[in-house]
Length: 270
Image 1 (cartoon, helix red, strand yellow):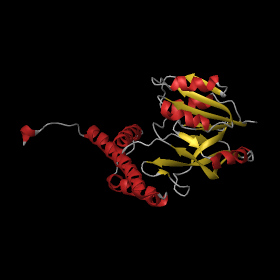
Image 2 (cartoon, one colour):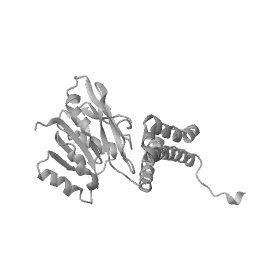
Image 3 (cartoon, one colour):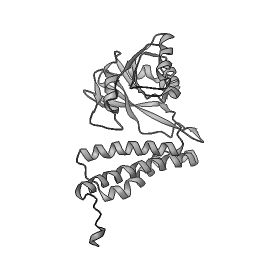
Image 4 (cartoon, helix red, strand yellow):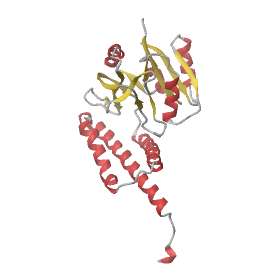
């Protein structure tokens, strides 16, 4: 089978439970670049088993550089004409795999493609095609984009020298069904990274954002993205997003408040 001139690039750490199905969905790719930052489970052995079976994997060990830095390192190792960023808990669905030959045959002025992603919801399964997250730039011509290393979380490829279009069909399927106990811990971690980034950039906390951002985030996910179609599971997903938005704004406000007025126990003055 002729392979597509695409390098998939993946960063991972302790992804034994998810990575196999991700790799399996990349069977048509000419190259798979995987960068591990210190797995202690069976991830390394899993990757080696695919290498031993002849999969076109180039495997690297690299100390953690942060999300953007780690992905930039992985992107820099890619050798094919096109590069596709895939997370270890994502899989390409069949419509997206079928569309890839058309995407990479695009005119030279198109340097990248934005792709939809559909999450797996506990109690529901993968969201239907009409229910998807905002399309993000995942497929880029080699040398026509890179990561903004200043982004601490929700990093994305920054294109240069051409147009970026949206794939008309197909999705990345995101399979990491965390119960709410674990998902809130993840949102807490990501909101800390985001708030720290905004604080370091000198962003000012706004009471209006603290009050309205969570509601707007929920409404966007629930109605515009279509999570209302997925019953209680969709409602929980949208509410979890609202929690992330609230935590980000609250943490930014408190960091600035502490910088302006450090805590002081003034009970003796009252």
